[in-house]
Image 1 (cartoon, rainbow, N blue to C red):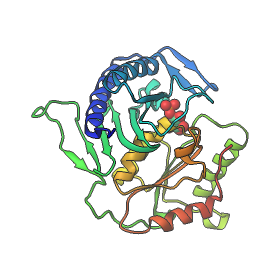
Image 2 (image 1 turned 60 degrees about the vertical axis):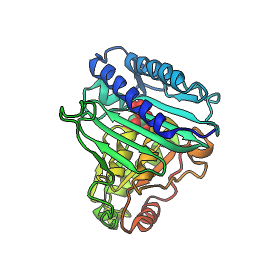
Image 3 (image 1 turned 120 degrees about the vertical axis):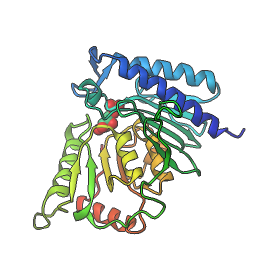
Length: 300
Ligand code: IPD
């Protein structure tokens, strides 16, 4: 049966605002670790995911649900069926430190393709949304009532339908994250990527215009969608980190150029993501320059 994507979008926005209220009211004190000491989860992550799964199952009982805090390696799969893919708090480390760059990331995949995306940063009351085929939007003061200061829905990318062309890496603003997987080959690939982006050309690098690590995969993708970042690279993301932001990026003319041929469509545990913003021209050339400089950045 056809999925009513607008209804899904509206449900996700309403759930995102409820999650935002929980996140703002929470005191991020009870912290547990998962894979290692920097892979953390709080009671708020778990409480938000419970709320989200209850509300989404009630609204769309036939859809599947994948969430970061209930994911089981080797058991949880993304299939062709409509599937909600949820990160209750993307940027948990920021949340714990009250660094205001964290969000709830709510995606719907249909036929494994990112089809609806809602990313909401409650600290800035900033909302990003997209429905496949219908463009991406950003809204400030999004949770306020109409007439009480709620911003317009602004189509992405910011600045209009003809985003400025991309230059080469030396003028690019690039986001790159360490993430929590820093063992063995993962660490070597990340270190090499950071090093080659930063190094001068004489030292085999790209000497990029600027490097940022802001701590939320979903918000990095939204910043690319908005045109505020040129590129975002990370190894070690999971589907819930990227599902919603991927839809928002693609609907804003950006592109996910993954270095992992397995990609998210087939494997939940896809490792490497390279996102590039929408541009009048230069997208392909910049991606080629990136892979040329860092080589094949596949993760284990
Ligand atoms: C993490 C954040 C971080 C990224 C990690 C993610 P979480 O998500 O997006 O920026 O570097 O790879 O796991 O754990 O805060 O939901």
